[in-house]
Length: 280
Image 1 (cartoon, rainbow, N blue to C red):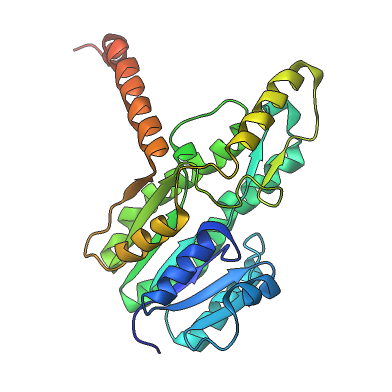
Image 2 (cartoon, rainbow, N blue to C red):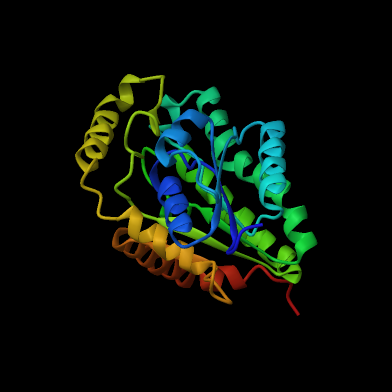
């Protein structure tokens, strides 16, 4: 067992996951960096680091998850921080998305989180401590045209984490939902972002505009993933980390505007909402 905490990070081969892994190592923690291609992980982090374990993990396969968790426990004896970061974007208008594409999006972004959390929680429960750091998105709070499947997957994760928070709190397990806007990572690249396969003519112009807008953002995203990673590593050391964290000015602005919209809609329908109770 090394000094510091033991971090188990999914999707650590690139993007925010890789930055979190590096920030945790720099802070003196042990890191289990996982991904579908261990060779990519090894090339990124190098060999021989005494507090780093690189291991294969496909979050869509429960047995792969169990094997990775077992390897982490065999090496370090515990898992203190679980970073559920693995995921990708499926963009496109709903009718352009095939059922298989949508199922694959949920298999990774939703069921992957559930599989990994299910495998780690018993060990955190037994040690009476732990921290669930889940990378959601502002897309888990606010819907977006042309991104229905991706937003739906993030909405699902928000509901899951918000619901299990009180279930695991009695065992000393805390959690944070991280809700970034656009970060300057590889998310908008071909490996992390795919589009609908149907290409229905009625949506052709809108889809072209969507693709163009995302390509225009690539490399110009305002969020710095290294700054975010260092901040998140710090969250693990505070007694009461925030249950939610909006990461980036764009995320903050979208969320605040959506809260105002929802409050307005609720107020407008208040009388009707209260009218459905039984009389007397």
